[in-house]
Image 1 (cartoon, helix red, strand yellow):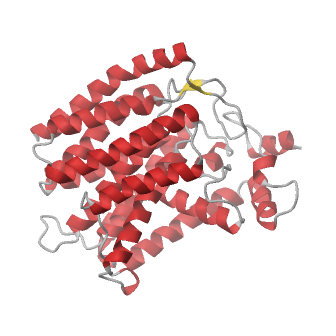
Image 2 (spheres, helix red, strand yellow):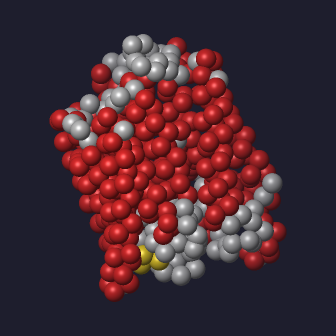
Length: 381
């Protein structure tokens, strides 16, 4: 317990102390996220280097508070460094999607081949159990990259990515604490402490954004935690045995992970790159229904908590039923949001049809907080 308190407190204090300094330096050097296109939801330039503070608090707390880590911690720290430099370069000079993807593959490969992070079984999902090593490696690298990008893509509203990351790290950290997995419990609560401090400056109206430096790190840490959770919880001799751990892990990351998989699928169906930008994320749908930034974050976190509770208390149903049920709930919720927004429904239809001049990237306008779907339609004419 002492290690958790030390880790979370150190992470909180370092991040809380670093953020104001980062804001001042960003203002002096004019390092801002400028609202220069229709997808940006903030009206004024905002510093986007908050991830530096998150990284500083997290990594120092982890290295100081973990009782022992061995080679696992060594290689995980190496992967965190790769992600940190990848993110900070993208925040300052902007990387191409291919270079970002390549850097994430390098970090994921370090975690898989050296860090012991590996999904070697589907645990009965669709009747699949143990998998060949090559397939396990491919699926694990894919999972790490998707989770890493899920927090990067959901980071579009003040306080949203940080709040969802805090929820995920806290839930997984509690489990690791209960089963005496000190390395991962300290990792989870160190991230939770850093995010708690960051959110003080990131709630709407945000004084600073976490940028790619923070969101990529947040996604990488949570990918490690959820894969390790599945590895440990599905062992029959575990202190807390959870055969449905894959479904529970998916539920913990449900909002960012499902939104990313949905968006990637939609872009591919639209014959576009999965990394191409648009305004179809769940936070865009909620904003276009008139929700404020704080309300979007509250609704997303509350919905994720509900999904976690529903999955946990239904864990005896098995992974196949639970995972398919979660996907059904996700699509039903998104379909309801789109159906109740006539403007968004029309845009999606024309984009999929490929009609010239009606693609969502060229038709979208910047919406102010409180703008209704009807008002947006009039402004777009």
